[in-house]
Image 1 (cartoon, rainbow, N blue to C red):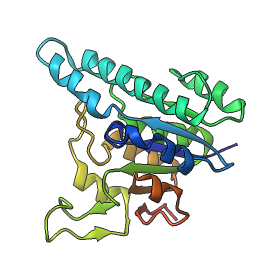
Image 2 (cartoon, rainbow, N blue to C red):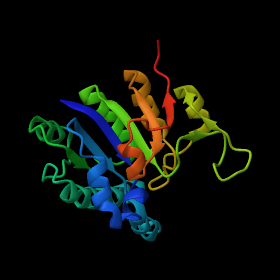
Image 3 (cartoon, rainbow, N blue to C red):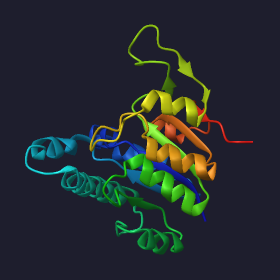
Image 4 (cartoon, one colour):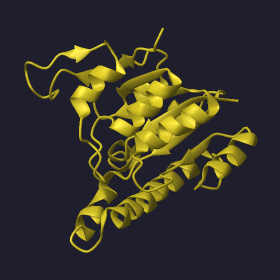
Length: 211
């Protein structure tokens, strides 16, 4: 049974390809999981095509980039060998009992939105792994920024409004938030280092579930 779904920011993976063995160790628990990877540095392909393609075409480039990253991580983890491209294929992969790594599914859905959809499908916990250790009141690099330990979907919407363009999902987009809200998905936004992901205390920001 799938217990956890991870949204692993593509930049985390592509900037740490020399640490694949550490990610393998971090994801080595016996609990079945699904990991959704982003595009990372391959977002440059989207930027290069901006003046030639429409938004859907750019999304399709991004999806292929996420699947390449997914294949790389799946190989390192000895996970399910195929990269699911549809919800039906995700179900098929999960039925094997093996961990599964995947990328995007359809245009218009960010890595976080895909991961939220998969978490909803399996009624699993959602862990959004990013380059920062949670949600902040403003840019974490600003001295005045304060970490928010617990937040709500409504509060996050105010922080992330309008974040829908291909390759620009820096925190979490509105589609992902809609899915989290409608199914009351247990969600945490955490630092995506191998050390933190392996820890039982992820020390991130928790999105409060509805009572």
